[in-house]
Image (cartoon, rainbow, N blue to C red; front, side, top):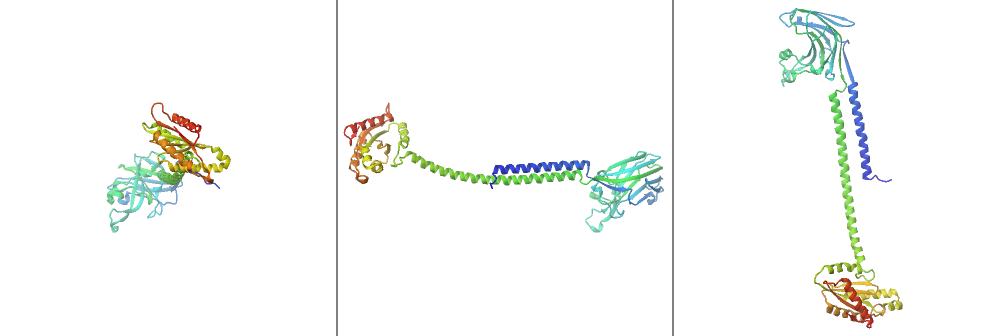
Length: 441
């Protein structure tokens, strides 16, 4: 089973995250559409098993009269408003929850929906109250805290006849008389709808003597299971988590890629170092004669380039080859002939200076390039080599002699490397013609 390469693994991760993002986008769109066209929740306030009563200013010593008539089509409040020393009003009261302490958290809804029928002989408003049972006190001392029914209200201006009213819950406020009565400040003076125990529909602010009929046909609380704000917050959190996870995975992936890259670079550097060593070894092999170990023609090229770039420096070329070397091969065999070549090179290398360049030029032909040496110096060196070679005994007692041709090189005028070799070759030919085992210039 083959391992995935980093490129394919990365592509797979990108493809996976594309699918995840597409899924989240589709899920988000479906939630938004569902929240807009569906996800509805409805609480029936009236008609229900709720207790319906009436109240009014008579509780405070007022003179207004109210009656309640409950029929199949709704609860009807008949009220005769009679101004007195107290604020004149009548109210239709519908209990929610147990109507005492345990109410309903209506903050999860958006609107209070009312189907009302209104009739009066004088123009009047209608006050809609949601009564919330709560602890009222800003004092940190628990003993000073007391429970109270907080009034949260909105005002509507009803039209004659039967109409539908939808009241946003976030527009309910606490009336000033309630704030003054309870000396409420801070949060206590703000609307709160987390424990509503009653809905009160009261006559309005007119101070005139009047007769008012208010019939409540239906009352509901409506909203979304998830509000738009909460839904958008949830979606933002989901997207933030997805993007954060993607970023973490991407950083982890990049860290692994960087680690792998460093490992690859280290391996590549190690390989390059190895190849550099091999290159140096191959260059040495390419520039040296495989049999004798001395330089070959390629190994002499750098020296020729140096000679051409130098001004005023004198070089001498000693060119020599082994006399009658074919006879050695024919008599003793090529293997022994190779040994003779190697023995000869060892001998010559031991006799020349460290600054001299010794190379096998081909077959049994060799050259020595002497730095800072004129023809006289080269003549002395060549005769020294010739005498030592002639006196030496090589493998299996074989003895050989060599013929030498000399030339001098100094970069000036038409004096070139090619002319230097041509002169030395002519001198070597002359030495061969002159009887061999000799030096010619």
